[in-house]
Structures are given as structure tokens and as C-alpha cells.
Amino acid sequence: MKNMYVQITENDLHNIDIKELINQGLLFRLVKPTRSLESIIHYVGRINDCASPAYHSCISQLWQEILCSPKIKPKLFITKGKNKGNPNYYYITAIVEILLQNNVYDNKKYSLLTLCKIMENTDKKSNFYTSCQVYFTRDLAIEIKRILRTYLQYLTKGIK
Image (cartoon, rainbow, N blue to C red):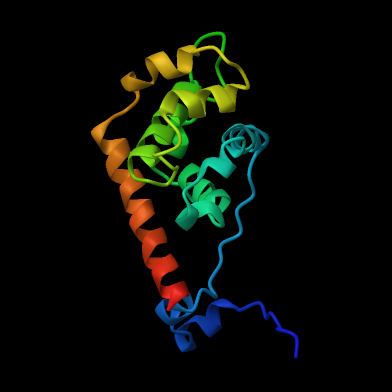
């Protein structure tokens, strides 16, 4: 028997246990990436195969969640100068570093430099690698870890 999806209305919300839907993995949020977000997704998508086994199947979803975080999204794009509106690849590289430190990417096989070279599609050390530390902040690390905790809870409930 096929699954049947039914759109709910505001009136239906009082009859639905949202936490139960989350626990069952049945609650989804529609995310419409902008062109700029799509370019970031494409950029980090080059290292999807470098994800640790636990994250390999959900790395794209994890990045969607990271890029849509209200604390991270405003900092993803350059706001001043001639590059205004372009993705801030220094900031994105700092996110990759935090994910690498938290074993989202296989840190036994890959270093940040290696991941940067793959994202940049080059054999040379990029400026994004050498200058990303400016964007590596405590607040960013806390937000990434919060998102990871949510994913770990989801993954462990899905395994049981």
C-alpha cells in the first residue's frame, strides 16, 4: 500500500503530536534554496564523499540545515565591497573545519587542507584555507554543534 500525504491546516494542529511526528521522522520542512545557496551547496557537495560513514547518507540534508540556520545564514554572503552578494567561502571553510573536528568528515583520511583543495578543485593551498580562522568563532562552533546534536538524535532514533 502506498503512503498517502495529506496537507494539514492550522485547525488540525491541536490534534497532532508534533514531537511524535519528529520522533518518527515524518515531519519535514520545505526549504527552497536561492541561487546563491545552490552555489554553496554545489561547492560543499564536492566533499560529500569525504563524509564519515555515519553522515554519508545525510550529509546533504545536514548542509541544508546548516545553511538555513537563522544564526548562520546572514553570514554566508559578503555584504560589502566589490564581492557583495557572493558566498563567503572563508566562513564556509570555517564551517567545514568545525564539521571535520566533529567527525562529520572522515578526519582519519582527510585534513582541512585536503577538503579545501577538493572544494576548490585545485592542488594549491587556497586563501580560503589560510584565512578561514578569522571566521572560526565560538558562536559558530556552538551553533554547528547544536545542529549536529539534533542530527545525532535523529540518526540514533532512526537506527533503533
